[in-house]
Amino acid sequence: QVQLVESGGGLVQPGGSLRLTCVASGFTFSRYTMRWYRQAPGKERELVAAITSAGAIRNYADSVKGRLTISRDNAKNTVYLQMNSLKPEDTAVYYCNANNLYTNYEYWGQGTQVTVSS
Image (cartoon, rainbow, N blue to C red):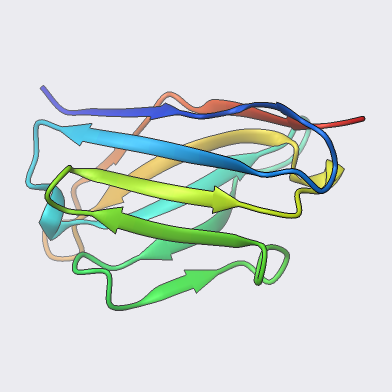
């Protein structure tokens, strides 16, 4: 059974930090590109960050460059999103996504809420 389980969301003040974690199971994690998306109320889901299967390449949305860092530990089947200098506009549900570029199999987590507010 394929699962992506996110955790680490919560309420944080502007300028604060959070670390999101996504633990994968049921598929060969090391063969998948991992991405974090987010969706704010009334807005479309947007890509925040991506990391290739071996972790060699990372990409970020312009709005989060320099503040968010994606990383992965293939031995633990886990991908992380370190979020620093958070802003109210970062408030959203954050989703973990796994995609195999060769088979195009794709999986989603259930999401974790991040709220940035004073």
